[in-house]
Image (cartoon, rainbow, N blue to C red; front, side):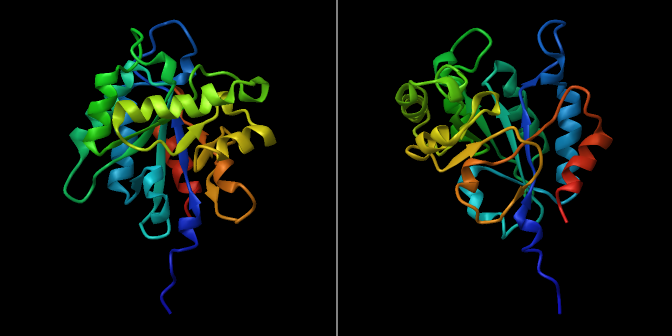
Length: 232
């Protein structure tokens, strides 16, 4: 009997990036990944049979080979490099895609993506624009949930013309109230708890999605271990 890979599809690596750029010498170095390293990592996924998905394609995780989600938080202008790399490496059989999580009140700041950037990315079919709240607060200490969750969702949807269905919790912080509020507006909530998504059907598992950081110091060998240790 030929084994199904449905079990493997229940172990889905979800990676998180921030800045795709050379480290400028200030800020947190580990939150940067150089464009060269990012391209090497994406080519590794391309050449080793991975399927890059967005949350709109979540239902397909049991239907495709080696599903993986590549997420990028904060909406920095240098995230346009992701789009450039994707256009460079795409083929007829490999069409990369990924979600960007945008802080809606930061849109258009000098080092952040603009309205026009977001429209281009959303219309490309490669980049799904999702929410990282309005102002990036620790939601476990916040009380402005309508502004942070609903209003940020609405603002991004007005810009892109596409539904916003996923929220990345700032700092990865959440509690039962945060989950309850997130469920009012979103279908998915993302933490920074490391590890792959493993389907268990426990309550609210789509609002407790784990993600593994890819850092400045992450070598290609490290990257290979991360993505392959998550796929059985």
